[in-house]
Length: 253
Ligand code: CDP
Image (cartoon, rainbow, N blue to C red; front, side, top):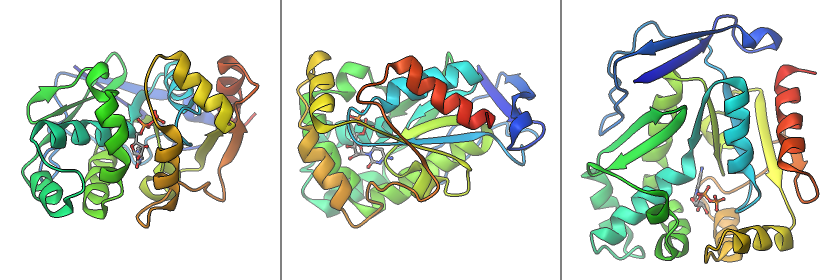
């Protein structure tokens, strides 16, 4: 089941008037990006872009915002993680860009939705969150995500998905590159110490400082704060406070 949600009135204060369509179709974004059962296209699906560095809390916030506004949550990082897992699974060296790009050409991604959460399968395999946050994935994902061909393929998957669904999408380049036209851009930050501490509390081994360095300094779509983004430092705010700020800003309050 795929829920398609579109705004009847476009972006703006009245966007809460949603038309929720529940179709029995399936959105498939594979090679060439095909979309089954597209139905009537929304001219302005609601798109909320949330970017920020590793462990800034953007994913937790984005999920809650999506729930509050009844739209779908998509982690773009999950796509980069899934492809990194696939690279490692296939025994490809992440540093060998040609081999990575060649495997990319043969790889089908299926983007779907379950319980208002975006899901991703790769090579016919639906990945678990444990697989996507494995240490080997954490330590290689930023190298893979710096490859321009990988970015351009995944960005088209992300755009194809959001053409059909209103989304809260979180990542590194969602406001700057993927959906620069959306007026709803947020950058969730937190101090490096707080972010390290949050990841440790999750019990996950993750070199977030190294990932931040690569993500911010790469040539292709580096992590930046879009000029028109609302910046929220979550270091000393509760999740609820950050969610409230985002939802209020989207509602124009
Ligand atoms: O949750 P966390 O902030 O730790 O990371 P993530 O959102 O799952 O993203 C994992 C990695 O994917 C990042 O460190 C980036 O290298 C890459 N990524 C990206 O380049 N562009 C995005 N839009 C999302 C993630």
